[in-house]
Amino acid sequence: MNKPVLFIHSAGPQDKQQGSTKLVTYLQNELNEDHHLIIPRMPDPKNPTYVEWKRELNKQLQRLDEEVILVGHSLGGSVLLKYLSEELCDLTIKGLFVISSPYWGLDDNWQLKDFMLNPHFEKKLPSLPCITLYHSRNENIVPFTHHEAYAEKIPQAILRPLEGNRHLFDEGLPQLVTDINAL
Image (cartoon, rainbow, N blue to C red; front, side, top):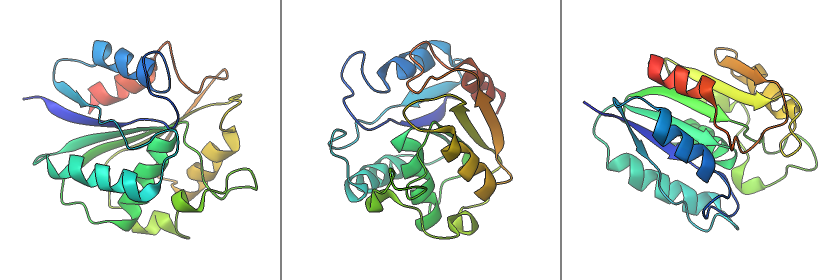
């Protein structure tokens, strides 16, 4: 049986060769045949709002009736963490994989109130068997300090600090494939 992997993409343009598209293509090619990748186009990615993304995420989750693996890239990871810490989800979540996600409100440059997590959001997260955080140490889009902030708030998370400065992972993310296939 194919396990659904719901992938929530980054903000910004998502056309061919932009945003999360190369990472999605990589995952489609590399995940084993036991997985079925679901890639919804999130509303207005160039000017996202949490209300609209939450609505689309709700729609996608309601279509599923089994366990799911959640993957969020950049803003997509922030949205998944916010959603899971604020909403009830009746699905069994087998794993949550967060890639290069901003921690909104961490400093003056990251102040989109729409996407900020509630104080102590980590206490509201459902019990998940696997939370894994990926982030490049020298990334120039979302600083590594965001990864460190999430790591401090979610101490049960598996940390995957990556060498280099990748944000889009145009050449893929082999460790993510290994981790998903291992579930």
